[in-house]
Image 1 (cartoon, rainbow, N blue to C red):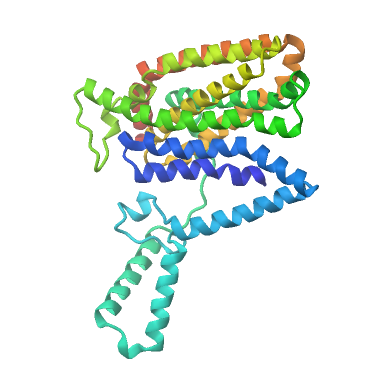
Image 2 (image 1 turned 120 degrees about the vertical axis):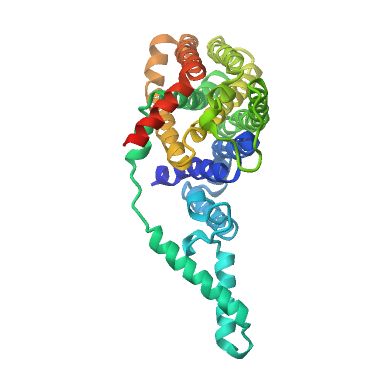
Length: 385
């Protein structure tokens, strides 16, 4: 039940961002969005531990989630209208009732109630306008009937050559970061003697890393886009957005990833050996910050690329990213303790860096050199089908 709710967060976020932002400006928007989502994962253990400790019962953790979730539902209900362009276009079309904010529905209800109570004061022009709006809504309802979404559409995306590479770069750093997070309680309890509250606080360095990494990388993504456009002498369309069928978006998004990957792998191996040799507690905490920041950067960059190459179905593409990263995370965490018992902490994280690095090098190289060609091949196959 929890996974059903959590899985919608990034899919909806990336879908809304893709609707509202042209490709050249998506990085700056995705930074805060992804940073907030990842920060919650790090702050949650601290808040949950404090609530459980203060109340003396784990049930209050879930009651707090109910209260928090209810507040979020109200905020979203009043403030987030439908943004899908196939429903509302550029905003000039009205969505059906379920795609409109509660405030707009309340306004319509109040106007209709006022009109029924005092029909003699109803303005004829307004009445005609409302009638035309209802006619358009009815015709839109007939044209766009509700259809049960096909979950296999998200699964199919995983097996295309170009998207498989992108999904690896978005999902594998996330899975490795989950291994680091799963390792935090035993490491800081057994090695450094932290109590439960201190263990919860140790998650915060990773939380700050996700925020800093997401914000900084968002700016970097937009800068890389502009530099790539300048290199190919392309004029960016900031109003309607660029036609990515003729733009090397793969090269723009992956630009500079080699250097970030090198720092990431060094920090990952260093983290393993730092906790293996019981280094000062500040060292693993700092490395957690670095790993969280770079993992967020990779996830943000290549999830943005995933949405870019599936402009007609951004939420479906984001859902395929959820499937990949959660599957990789589950496998990585499942084999974590048995492999650490066999290899030791240092060699285990060294192995993670080798696997992640080898896969990352291949994925980045093929994405930048062959990604656009494979994307065009996929589009031709889709057009034939």
